[in-house]
Length: 267
Image (cartoon, rainbow, N blue to C red; front, side, top):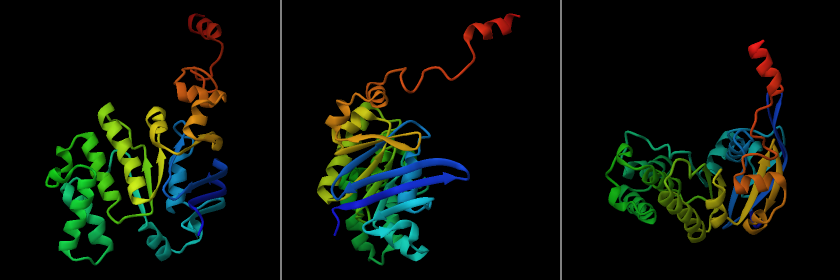
């Protein structure tokens, strides 16, 4: 059995005639937290969709737990997805269900477990994210950080081997952001799962991930451990890590010469 739970080999993907990802090689070992970073529109979420089987590669392979995702029929894909968890941006909780029922939903949907056992499992997952006392609350009553933690409890309900996080830190205050980061690290270590984190939050991510891939214009621009990324002299990585306004990603959108525009405006 390979140490890598996820392997992406020579992957390219196009929407229509537009190339979104090109020649992507990426791997994530069991028990590892791997961050996928880059600017908006660079292909990060598309990569998650390819790993989850929502999209099929134009070229190359995506292997999860030894299975080629793009080659699976619908039944086999659904079976593989039961070994995956997904934390959507902003949580995506069912608004008309309590926190308890949100976490119980995948257990009721995908297993034949008796309700008493489901109850024990739900309480266990909620306790792991610190929300057992909030089990009767509705999503509208939760803060942003609490909603994200409830969604995380739902994502681990079926005890998956892989959890994918799409911008888990978006919109959170500093305390909630730190709590979610610590939870991702702790649950990965405790459960021995693999975590793939798509994020813009470079500083929080570098505290808790094992490896980072930077995507720019559809290709992997850089990769390495957090220490290697911090020390990188690559202009794109340096700009991203330090939040600089100008660099390989320019501050100004391409335009005609400013003086010419002023002349046209006042001509």
